[in-house]
Length: 226
Ligand SMILES: [Fe+2]
Image (cartoon, rainbow, N blue to C red; front, side, top):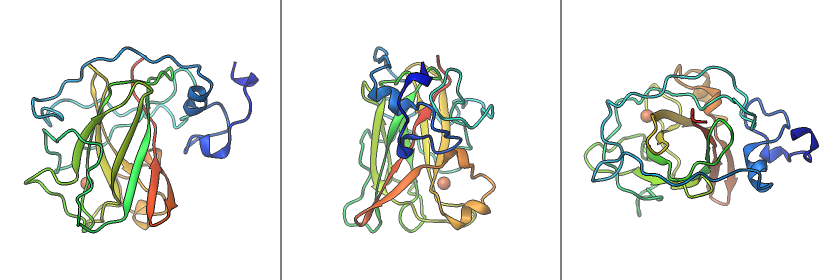
């Protein structure tokens, strides 16, 4: 089937291991995907994930191919780190008015291994502020949201600041309704510390472009569900 489809523009080719084969986004454009029924995610009454102790999915290092092919590699897991805080508010924007930072949007889709877009997937983001500090007292720069019926999410935030020992990154937990939690991190291309941060993994690089005074990033998750 894929051999009969037209070439995919460069911007649609997966960021890693992309070789011009059909991508999930392209399949969406072609209407070849089926949206699953919505479900309920396991969240606390206050929203967000209930506990940091819920086991993550095991890292999947089967491959780096992110093009939409059956049995494709799932998004790898990474350490939660010390700054996760359960119960984040439900919101797609975690921008703090009046606080400094370069505007950033992160958008993308959540797919199953068979390239189905997954609706009602819970995504819980947390990150450092412009100065590289996490707020563990309130929920500043924290928020959870759900994918829409097409599997799409959009986070409105700022570019996180750097802090000692790490390259620039955003933390996220992703959970298909009733499924296991994937805890991972997203990275920015072109960061000098990507070469020295031992946690950094290029499979989690976002596509990032500059738009005006801000940045637009994209990343598609692939969960270990059929
Ligand atoms: Fe962090």
